[in-house]
Length: 448
Image (cartoon, rainbow, N blue to C red):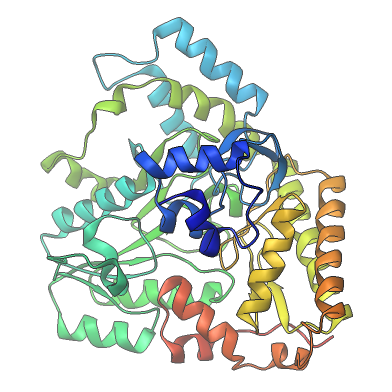
């Protein structure tokens, strides 16, 4: 498959034939890249480098990154303090050792135990998928029970893709059951599998479900003798200095974290009660690259910055500015769309999916990368000028739609209805929520 053939789905308006971008795409597609996952689901370009809030493609075009490198770099790519710490550690120690116990690992664990309310012990891995898989193992070993009840995405590993039939995973784990964010289904499953449920594993979707929902899930788990596991791979320290569960008085038995712990460097963690973490003494979740010291050096540089209140306040302020600006434009142009809700991890929902796709394509043409239907995560490196440029590009996109009739028949008032159909569909597509659950918990924005 060539770059030109991908263009019809991944690049609505491809570059002129023969550009460096096309050649780079052709090479990538020939040997490694996936048209579906790397291009259609992300961006149809080959990245050359990133720094701060910006990324450059193979043609040298610069874009503002509204994904924070898919959430991995909340401080911005190449944060100088983090880079210096990694380079110094690489030069000092060689970057890896034959043993898994290092001073840096201990120091990072101590920082996390001090910052994260539920944490008494920490085990480190490389990726979010590895961390959630290790947490699932720990819950099963700790309780001696086989069944896990889950909602949300916990990574690409086979055990948890029950709610994604389009993944075509053979031999799915029959002891992992998705409850679709539905409390009634969860209660039924806990009764049906009484005495066999190791834990209930929840990924909070903060733009659709309030803290009261997570608290209800936790209470059902604990009332039925199951552990409560919270997947904060995305939220983590981006949401609050102690993660999502701290401000909302949740008491998870295990938490998984990754994005932002080491700002742009692969490091994940399972944190939790010592009694539950003790189960890992009776199984094995280690990996060769637990011996690597550079990610811990990156974490030691990142964590004090990420947990500094003014830093997180700035990230949230930037997110609010983007959301408020987009919502203002949607109101001005009468577009049935809304940016919601938490400034660190927000979504944009369109009534007209085709309009939404064109809108995001226009943003990319103007030099702003954000995934249509994906999670928007701004970084600390994004400036006020970057926000202004983004909103100017958004205005231009909507002006073009208005001029060509693309905004005809929009029903802006529908956004404020409790059962707004696009919100229901978004929840079903994005994280496998059942229709009645979104209808029950969805809180529309206040009327203009």
